Length: 177
Image (tube, rainbow, N blue to C red):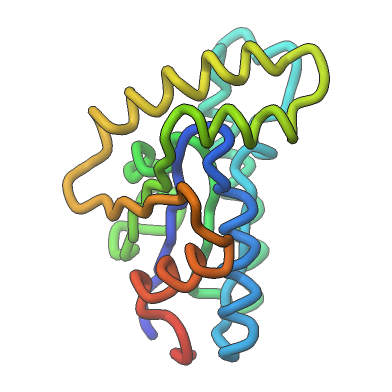
């Protein structure tokens, strides 16, 4: 393989991005397929936001650049990246990984009831209501603005393993070194 490949797993809060991303990694490991995983939510965890970067996009890109450089130096060519809006960030990935990167934009979907139930299990502190509101808003935004070619994978009523198998099939990475 002479170019980088990136699987962007996006979706509303509570849809299962991180869980599916880790399960995709397990399936790829079992197939002997080299890859790395970056949880995008960790790339902008700074408070307060830098004055010149209120939405934290610049620090996200700087951190992604640094982490990816380490993985690439070890010979990695495939990246799984999970983040709510990752499918909207293709230009950032082209800046960080190069213009010849092959991006697979994938949007996990669920209905409101499913996402709310999952968030109720995960968010047991003071931020549950805020997460629900943001999840609902982001579901609508992603549905409207996901770029052409974005693959949508429904998660309602499905096991994580079943979803991950579908995602791996979309990438075509399984068994390829």
